[in-house]
Length: 153
Length: 153
Image 1 (cartoon, rainbow over the protein chains, first blue to last red):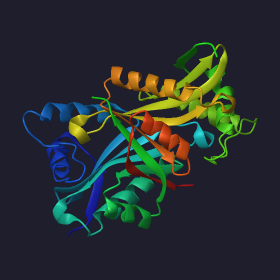
Image 2: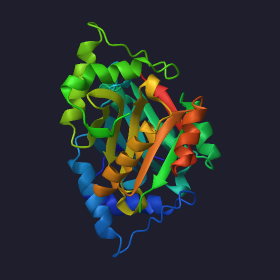
Image 3: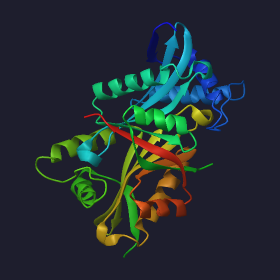
């Protein structure tokens, strides 16, 4: 692998990002890139770009998108007004796992969050993703909370 | 109790909101309203007001602030571009607990989220808050995720 580069996602990266979501066997979010689903992804991409609190990133090996993650800055009163950064939708290409891409992405995220004034980072991970839990604990995250979800539609 | 009303927080509510945070014995976020801490809370309140993705609410019994919560709308690619709403900093006045204020706040949050196009709601709750976990499960939330945190400062 050549050196990994990480930058904000551009619209031309969208298909490659959704292809990473397609590989996700556990999340069962039904993600697939097709003529039918494309408009919804394009709308969500625009909404992320438009939001001052959200940043979507890709990790590249040369020109190839091998990873992605999203950061959400959350202004908050709790903790004496401490801004938090939530890490979302962390994906690494299936054929490129376990070579440190995820760790580089999280290190980048942490650096970006700190540089932009965040006091804490947080994320949730499906209870079935045991490998991911070990990964985040190795990186200094504490598994202190229960994560609750409710579908509205 | 007279009928509960829920509305967006105004700057005049800030001290009452932080007083609810002060009562929190488990979170240990060090929240206290004082001349020293006030500027940080005012800055965070302004940041929440300014953010198009965040809304801070108070629940009122007459003129008294008896509860608060924050909603963060998160545009996201995962789930075919499904917007999520994160519920943050849910607090009910200690002397008013177990009379349905929390359930009314979460029902309001759910309604607000659905009306504004969210496909799912999520929240995290410290693993020690067993009563809160039962509360969210009763309201239809699934405890499907592990919640990870990392302090940056």
